[in-house]
Image (tube, rainbow, N blue to C red; front, side):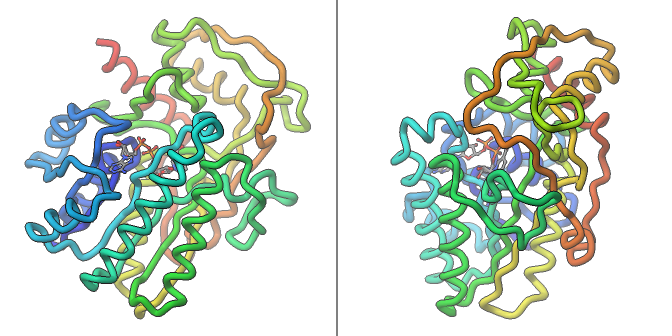
Length: 337
Ligand SMILES: NC(=O)c1ccc[n+]([C@@H]2O[C@H](COP(=O)([O-])OP(=O)(O)OC[C@H]3O[C@@H](n4cnc5c(N)ncnc54)[C@H](O)[C@@H]3O)[C@@H](O)[C@H]2O)c1
């Protein structure tokens, strides 16, 4: 069975991807330092996949841990999730973000070159598009100056990958530009575990529904959108996980020194107010929310053109927005218990 190293595999997207890898007949080898995840995720993962999970605790900036893993498991590909992702914190502690997000990729690529490991899928983000001039965004929509050090790390990492491929290092790379991952595994056993106050809308919604937060503030209802609130492309985390499996399969078919990039979204934009109302409807819960002022730096609207991933990877989302919001709530209810 082919082994795949998943850095940050105990995190939100990584843990769901581990499930999809097993389903596809691949063996995930997790490397995580648990800086933004909990070890209990591993037990839940084992319940879902029905067998032990191989996990190493360590920092993927540390070449020695990569050596140790490789000496025991000759992985043939890497999915690189490990990174810090709090946009606000990245503004006050930029070096922490550059060191971890950029530094870990550099260490990992050096290691891959040394061992002749070819395939890597990289977690990029639609944040590289900033506020696009034209919607929906395609992969050739120009990237804009990043709004935050976090966003800049994604842009820099994409550039490093392109340069590395150009240098004929022998690697094959897919960057996946995620839109807004939401939802949880339908079993309710794994999901998003935000540290402290959530930065993302849906965990804030579920925590408000659970009574952990008093209310949701919608940052502005006077934008040029259908109902005045900001618009995003919300993608179920299981669909996103599946995109990684398809990306690995695609890399297998390529020649050395290959780079490609895909948007991973649904192709539909939904407003913040639509999310709140859909959540209330599918889960039959009233949410406490109010309209506040606009928030500095918010992108007003963005959604993906998914033609490329649909046609080239043969990937289409299987879950609806309703599924996402039902699964998110199911997960939150399990956590509260
Ligand atoms: N969730 C989103 O909204 C979103 C959107 C676009 C892109 N991304 C990117 O996707 C990736 C995964 O995001 P997520 O939402 O699953 O985040 P997450 O924080 O839940 O998962 C990241 C995991 O990486 C681990 N980690 C961090 N630094 C590490 C290091 N140096 N060594 C080992 N482990 C380390 C953390 O402990 C955590 O388990 C990140 O690169 C993130 O920037 C996320």
